[in-house]
Image (cartoon, rainbow, N blue to C red; front, side, top):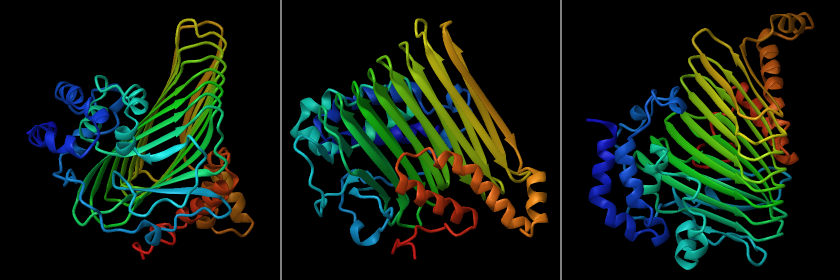
Length: 447
């Protein structure tokens, strides 16, 4: 039986239940998404953007789903202490795919700002959510997006009105919690109106030693002169499968930064599509991966220069050990008429063992003649001369390797704008290379 059939049967049998526990704005897209999923199925390795991930196999196991929205017995405020020292944040939790409301967030927001359950806001303010929901994440183009759209019942909605600047970083802790193997379908919608500014830190954590399968779709709208700083940190465990699709749209004179850090995981597949819809905009896409054992991380990006006078900067780095597998594929598309485009795309990788593998494919597709674009990738091992130099000065080989690997990853970390987060990640990266980051620091469930 194909992997798709169990999800087709699931939706056919439970669609009314799914709809009854969600909002009409989300329900309005389900049937179309279901039909598109039946048509597309799961993307196979024959699909260019999925050539390095065996998606059908990942979705074969029979996971449980919380379609009835049963209450999950967890108090995230007591369980998790995923704080960043010296970083003042507004803290929110998502337990699996449900916005945590049992204890109201200890946050006072300026008038007009919304940070709440997607389903609840879609019910109370349907005209606002309907204006944006599903407008970037097209179900007719991608089977994973279609599956998420037909099954997702809740998630997070963030709205920052015109010319409002969020002074504090918004921290979202995604907690996976279950007594059985569980599938989670999470949705996030971020809207920054003209002149708005906001910084976000998304942290993915697991609270139980169970198998989790997560699909996540994030849509982010960045208005004229708006500034989005989106930081995503994954510290899960080796039984976790995470498939995330992020869609960002930028209007004129806007700035977007997306930093994705994978410190500990099982199998991760991240896709990022960013489109310039307005001129004189700029984006910074940075990512780093530290993987060992049999962990797998596949990052796939596409930057669409649809208009002239925009700049894109992209840097991804991997350090792979043991039997880990990494993949990076990044396409920069410069459309006809998108003159005065500047783009730099770089992927650098360290492979520490003969059993680890890295696949890399940076790509440029240019249909304009007045542009400055370059791309490149490298795959190699630690510099023997540098190792020898450090050993000659009394540093043993293991410590020398740790120092060189840490310095290699720091180039990505240092591009993060939030200084307290940079400092915290410097420490976490070093601990990861020293084998001290198997559990979340301060997490009572993981002790």
